Length: 244
Image (tube, rainbow, N blue to C red):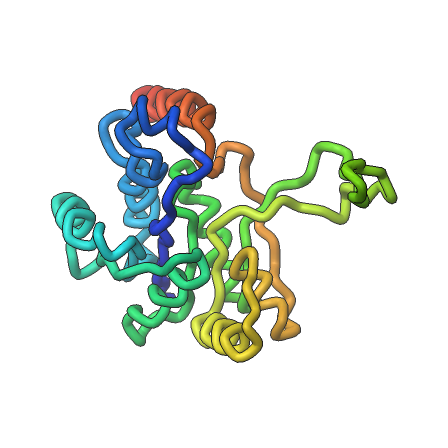
């Protein structure tokens, strides 16, 4: 089973904002340093550790192609980890990455570049599920009570309580058979559809998407406060490796 991985990393980091930029030198979260290495590099390491992954494509902004390529080439083989030009949206970046893949991948996994704490065991479970059924995402159960609301005239009103047992919070990686993801992007282009994630696009093909349970540690670093949690997780992981 050959798996190609796409990491969309062309975001501008608007949610990190000015305060984070003053502290770290950049508001683009994928390039912020986590214990000496950019978050993006930590994420690439997780997938590079899998012997099932034959190719990792990182989609970045055009102005970042050269220096990010050099940075990744310093640690990873350019034959296995490559950079391509991303787009102005996540969907465009993933599609550009999809077009740049080699033709021999059985599965394609899409993972947020700023989720560096995904566990290898979870990655492989998602690969196995997608290999068997065609499509799988990582998700976690909803623990809070969820309310459906309506908004109008500046006021928010509860309209219903949604049963939690029917809900999961979607994470990444999201893994699909190559031909399914190709068809999903083609249909989206034809319809002008913009999906919130890759699964929402594949679902439009009337394909059932499986869910592999993940972890609350698989955080997506999007806000300044997330970096404090990231440093905590990093030190916990380092301590476990030392004890092992």
